[in-house]
Image (cartoon, rainbow, N blue to C red; front, side, top):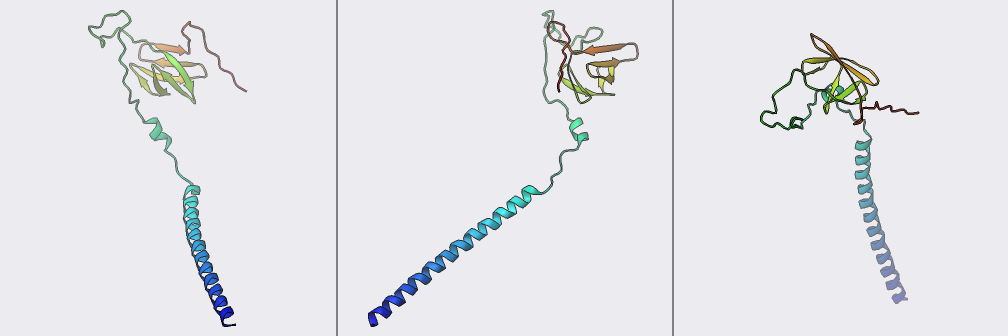
Length: 147
C-alpha cells in the first residue's frame, strides 16, 4: 500500500509538472498571438498616400543627350530655330513629349501646353501654335480602344 501511495504521488507530480509546462507554452503562444494582433492592427490602419501636387512636382531625374541627326557632334546644344517635339503618350490629361510628362499650362521650351485632348496636344508660343499627335515610326496614328 505504501508503494501505491508513492506511485500516486509520483504520478501527480509528473502530471502537475506536465500541466505547468503546457500552461507556460500556452502563455508564450498567447504572447505571440498578441504580438501578431498588434502587427495586423498596424497593417489595417488607414494610411495616407502622397499628395498629387507632390507627384506633379517630381522632376525627371534622367538626362538624355542625343547627338544631332546630321552626325555633327561639335556642338550638341547648337539649336535650330525651333526644336522638334515628339508626342509619345497621353494618359489622364498628361502628355509625354520628348520623354517628359507635361500637363496643361506647363512650359516646354518656348511653348506652353494649352490643350491636351484624347489624341492630340496643342502647344503655343507668342508667334504660332503647334499641334502634336501620337505617331508610330511609320507615321500612322495609333488608336487604342478598350471596353
